[in-house]
Length: 313
Image (cartoon, rainbow, N blue to C red; front, side, top):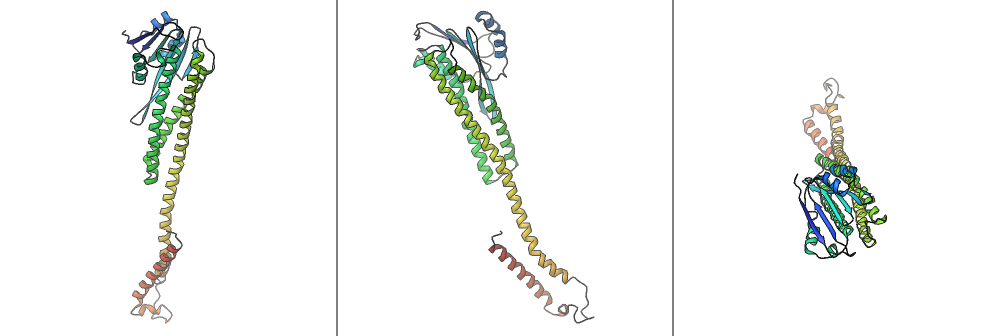
């Protein structure tokens, strides 16, 4: 199978040794050959080939194996990609199935020879790679923040059922993001805290820096999860308020028609005024019908004025 790789050699190591940095992109490389020549453990090779691994770090006698997750948002869809690093004595191997531009800045710095990346050991390059991966988290969270703000505006202006779907979808993404990024806390913490022959003392401070970034990402995810949960409550409250407004209008209308129905019911009784002078004598009055209608209208206006004064609508 074909293998695409890029190699840089640094003859100015801070420890006076030559560092071989190997970037292997895509799944086209012969993993079995790396297992044979570099002595990778079969379980490590299995983890490299399995794209559903959770972030972790494993230290062996001759190398450190690190598994990370990169995240991207495309058309409101969360995309996860696995990224593996093997840090050995004087070399680095990286594996990813789908090429992207996450590490373009790192490669540009390596080519230009500027900064610490060409003067420090391979563990510093691992720090830069992990830092680039964590930057993808901030990019995703920034887009999630914009989506949350848009949903909030829709909730205030015109809440509908589509908002409920968007909130549930975004909340599922936040849960998946949290479940995948939370182990990063242990990965970076282990690299900055545990003494290893592969990690130099002067590099540990850089790993502590990205540990703080990881904590910040987790806090932001928790914040957005709480906001989305609050949006669900706000949506249900909005529906309840709209229902209450409808019920209030219907109640006012029904209340106005109660006395009108009472009057219409009285004059709907079949009593003959000729049989007795007490049997609705106003039925023979020439102005009986218009006076009754005007009286019903006056009663309705008085009730509307009273309801308005009480601020019931």
